[in-house]
Every structure is written in structure tokens, then in C-alpha cells.
Image (cartoon, rainbow, N blue to C red; front, side, top):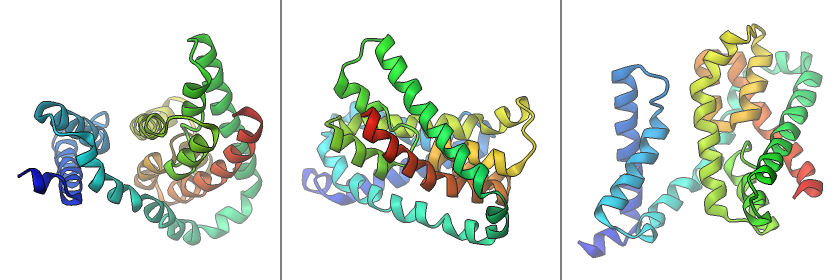
Amino acid sequence: MIELLNTPLFGIVLSLASYAFGVYIHKKTGLLILHPLLIALFCVIGFLLITGIPLSYYEQGGNIVSMFLPAATASLALSIYRQFDVLKKNWLPVLVGTGIGALTSMLATILFCYVFGLDRQMTVSLIPKSVTTPIAVALCEQAGGITAITVVIVMMTGVPGAILAPYLIKWLKIEDPVIQGIAIGTSSHAIGTSKALEIGEVQGAMSGLSIGIAGVWTVLFALFLM
């Protein structure tokens, strides 16, 4: 049994089973707050804590699952291609909106870290919270942060974005689909973009594009802020 757990198969099966359970609960209840990824996260953590199985066993397969994240993010280019005419008409709002959003996120994080007295290592681990995981982890490693914390905070930023996006759009009366997509993609990366695609194809395309551009802005701002 130990030999089976100490293989990549364990982490892969646990990840897929937890997510499948999350999808089932989400569809069964219809509650936005019960996002499949959030449920899967708690299932994996709970299972490891209850069973006492070392995290290193899970990471063998979990890292393989994570390896497909960049490819999944890149697949969003298909929706961008379909909405290329919309992009050409709105390239300036996309560029400016993602820049302001990325800078605001980073400055707000630095401010809160200062208020709560967090040290530099923790601060640089939290700063890239609103960009996609590969970029966030690379920035964290270069700045001497803790990558495990960065991965968790990136996920915990994206999930609330996906949950709250429909409500915020309604409450703030944002009717332009381009603005909706830019806001979602800049603040909650690929997880939020999955919700943007459900809202509409234009929103999904703009959100997917904003992930990459916000990532570039974040890298540039990181030269001065991290």
C-alpha cells in the first residue's frame, strides 16, 4: 500500500477525484460559493490531514497535474482568436486597464503586508497573487519568496474572483462585455476566466487576453516593487 501511495498515480487520482466531487456538489447545489476548485482544495487538504499521508507523496502526482496549467491557459487563445476584431477595436482599454489593475493589486498587497507587519519574504510571496501561477511562482522564486505560499494565494485569489464576478458586475452595473472581461482576467487570472467564458464569449476572450498582458505588467512592476 505504501508503495502505491509513494507514486505519482496517488496525487493524480486524488486531484481528479476531488475535483470531480467538487463539480458534482456545485451542480447539485447550484451555489456559486461552492466552486469546484475550492471544494477540491479542501478535499485534498482534509484527506491528507485525516490520513496522515505525507505531502511529498501527493506532490509527486500533484506536480504533474500542475504541469498542464500553462497549456490550459494557452488554450484560451482560441476564444481570443474568435474575438480578434473586438480586440483590435479595444486594444488601448485592454492595455491601460490591465496595467492599472496589476499595479493596484501589487500596491494594495504591499500596503496590507506593511499594516500587518509581515516580513519581506512573506510580502514578495503574496505580491504576485493576481497573475497566473507560472508567472507568480517565477517572480516569487527570483525575489526569494516562499513558492508554496504563492501557489496557495494565487488559487485563493482566483476562486473568489470566479465566485463574485457575476455579482460584482451586476452590483456595479458594468454592461460593457470588454470591461467585464478585462476586470475578471486582470484580478483573478485563469480561474476567473473560466467564469468569464460562462458569462459570454467576448468576456472570456478579453479575460484570457488580460491574463497575459497583466502578467507582463506585473513582471515589469516587479522590477521596482519586489
